[in-house]
Length: 107
Image 1 (tube, rainbow, N blue to C red):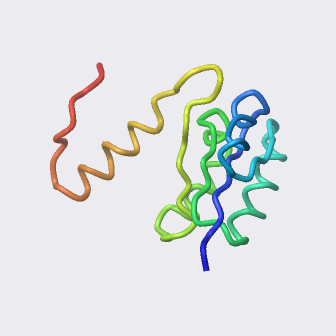
Image 2 (image 1 turned 180 degrees about the vertical axis):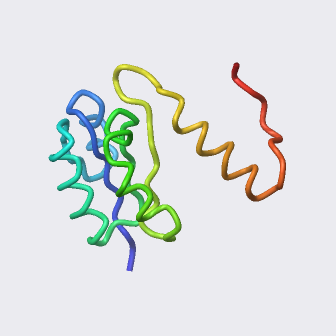
Image 3 (image 1 turned 45 degrees about the vertical axis):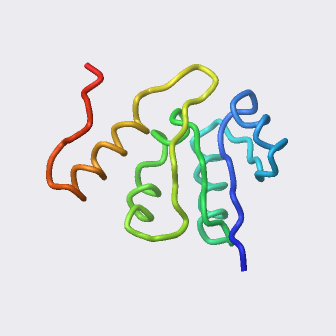
């Protein structure tokens, strides 16, 4: 059985993902984001893309699922640009896997 893909965030950032077949959930307040994420994490979703602006509002949910194989919760830049969270997570995971920071610093 295939898992579904969801995108969570403000309307302007996520609406375009509907055209490629992802399920889109518009949420902007912390409570809306928490409610949507709890529902999706317990549902049949393998990947949840979430805007970085929404991602920073739910650290407890991110911590709860970060070691689980599914759902993979992946931060993406929102319509207002990137907060740098996605690349920080990639660097951290690469460093954990390889034992050293082998990626270039953006600073």
